[in-house]
Amino acid sequence: MQRNFETSFVTQCAPVLAGLKVANLFRWVEPDASAMHAMAERWAAELEPKGVTVSIIKECPVTHAYLVYVYRAKSLEESLQQPDVQQYLLREGYPQGGLQECLDHLSRCLCCEAEFPHEIGVFLGYPLEDVVGFVANKGKNYTFCGYWKCYGDPAAAQKTFERFRKCTEVYLRCFQSGTPITRLAVAV
Image (cartoon, rainbow, N blue to C red):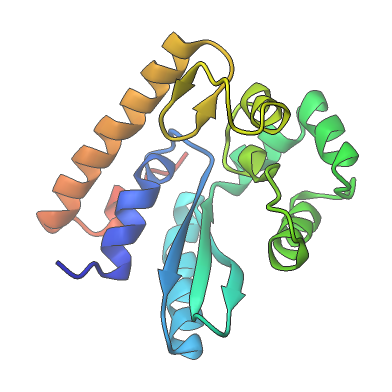
């Protein structure tokens, strides 16, 4: 079965659409760059009234692959303004400016760095403990693995992941039954 953009969008971003998660990221291949940008702009305009932002955070002209970043700006900004997260991002070289400055920096890191910027986890709503734990342990010694590798309370992580799984299952069923993405997106 060939997946279209909208199906991938719902599959990867249902918890964001439902307001359970601040952000998600997914890869999409589209040979026509102008069509891809138009599609991202269209979804950004349609979902903006619900508080959901859609942007292309990285693109590769060789492979025609795009990283589509879907997030709730208000929730993400609140998350990034937590003192421990701010200190972590400052240590990683991020500016003290607002959300857009941080996202621009992340985009540059994704495009230019030889090493993957694991701090992206805080931009996806992962607990800082898990982001720091992943880097310190080089992806090993985790307490639980689901949507990401956890280094804290495994029972809490399992509960969170189960909520995300159920949400995605319900949202996909609704979407496949004809509910448009704009109706799946909850205003938070």
